[in-house]
Image (cartoon, rainbow, N blue to C red):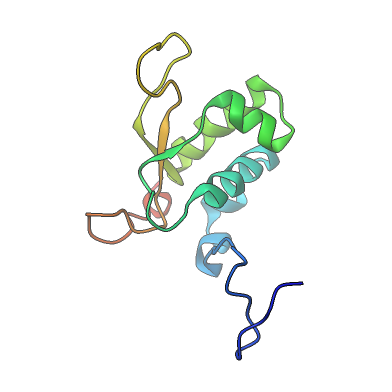
Length: 124
């Protein structure tokens, strides 16, 4: 077991932070189970410095969440339509140079080099 700090926390344990207000909003309540799984996986890939450059393909999302490829693609589309994620670059399976996977931005997290979070899910 890892050594705890004086405040009882483990300095090496990562966590996903989701605001209660976001969890209570209608857009979040309307998400399918698959979309929530993909959202949590995308949030787990955020290291605090890479929002806007989080790389995740449909195949990677499917493998990480236990979904098949088509439901994973629908989940990413659902999250985009609901305003929880925004693609910063769109990848394609046919891309042979550069990143083949899309890169994503979480809208409830500040984007490095920009002002605070856009909270797009509140306006949809």
